[in-house]
Amino acid sequence: MEGDYAAADLGAESLYFLPLGGTGEIGMNLNLYGHKGAWLMVDLGITFADGRLPGIDVLMPDSLFIEERREDLAGLVLTHAHEDHIGAVPYLWPMLRCPVYATRFTAALLRRKLAEFGLLEEVPLTEVPLSGQFSVGPFDIELITLTHSIPEPNAVVIRTGAGTVLHTGDWKLDPDPLVGDNYDESRLKALAEEDVLAMVGDSTNAMVPGEAGSEAEVREHLRAVISGLKQRVAVACFASNVARLETVIRVAEETGRRVCLLGRSMHRIVDCAEESGYLKGHTPFLSEDEIDYLPRDEVMLLCTGSQGEPRAALWRLARGDHPAVALDRGDAVVFSSRVIPGNETKIFELQNALVEAGIDIIDDRDHDIHVSGHPGREELIQMYQWVRPRVAVPVHGELRHLAAHAQIAKECQIPQQIVARNGAMIQLAPGDARIVDQVPAGRLAYEGRRLLPLNSPVVKSRQKMVFNGAAAVTVVLDERGQLDGDPEISTAGLFEPQEEQEELAEIDRAVRDAVQRLGKRERRDDMAVEEVVGQAVRRTVNRLLGKKPVTMVHVIRFE
Image 1 (spheres, rainbow, N blue to C red):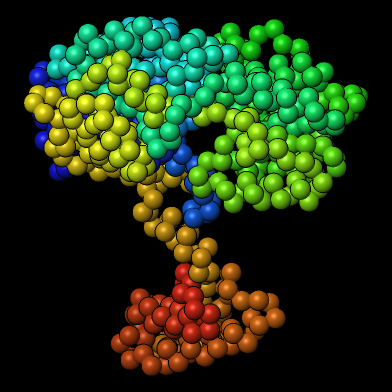
Image 2: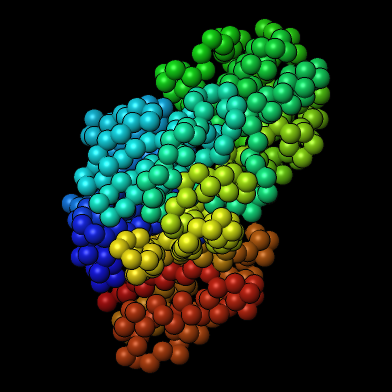
């Protein structure tokens, strides 16, 4: 079986890194470190499905490899609270059943997720302090505070008898983060004295020159933009970006506006932030019922939906079907966020709907009202100059991002660079780092209330039905195998109502001909009848429409 070599070779001198999610892609991170008979998991996240997977909203890594070895899984360390790093915990923890470690803000958000799944009292969640040190099996862990677009992002120093690894998580070097602690430059520099074996690091912006930029700069630009707006303003941003939420709240106060939160995730994040000691000392938020008691130029809406999510608050405002709040002509929507690749169509549809309603749109194409939470090239160079690892392992990026990151590491004179994808078993020690095995890695879809692999017949059939339609045929046969009455035919997603009767008549003729051509023995075989009738339907529809629908055939016999 694939992976047996590595599972059997977790000795005291060996150290392995195995990404099962987030390497070769952006999102749904799952990373494993193997040493001395045990595995350590770092992060367990989700990503969101698109229109190619109808009926499916959430995707996550296939954790089968570690599920089969869960008795050796010492624990799960979460670097920060973004969905692509913690979102899969409620779905996959029941198959893993390991201790979980997180800092205060991340733990607060995770507890709410676990409560929704009825797991709050079941998951052993240990809250660890910022810059904390603790042990998980044979792994000695130290957290180093970094900056990102959410509170309490941590790099994880993993010390073992076979070497030390810096797992950066998501980060940037923000000199003025506004919310939370600044990055711990002294601890990062001190790592160079430890002869760090490998740095496993964020590659998202490895192709972007310069630096990510500071949240303080965004605040200045947002203040300038919003101070010039004369009617109601809605600001859309990532709810998890607590520094941006704090910026919007302060800008509202400075421009004479009161803030109303719109969207479930916005309320959840704000509650977690306040519980964890962030977002303190602001003017109380407006409730939705209080908005219309204030002049329009004294209201600011802080909304979910910056990526065009159809059920989010901003789309409801654009459609005019929010139950309590409305935007009018001359109001403005400020998109203080970036366009995540793949979301362009949804966002542009949302913006078109807003424009049609007479609402002004302001985004980062014309104003510097967003900065990334990931390091640009100069920040990656700085990190390598501080840490000076022997091996660079780029993660958290598509293959092009990983290759660009590896090139930066090479230019920084890091001796080895390993570009891999999910499922690559990388032996970091002993000897030179190298890929020694490939284990199964894939994606799971949360469909209804169950987890299914993406190659599941259910998922494939759903996709085929959406793109090719469906047809169902019932044939009734007598004791001789002859048709008894007309075939019953129904279709979905194939014909316009005005043409359906004529097209169904053609399918009817094809079904009759197919049954008539069967031999006596085949007529008595239900599977044979189902096969030829299904073929007849698919061939006829393909001739008429160029489609091959999902076809269901029911055979009923009178004895």
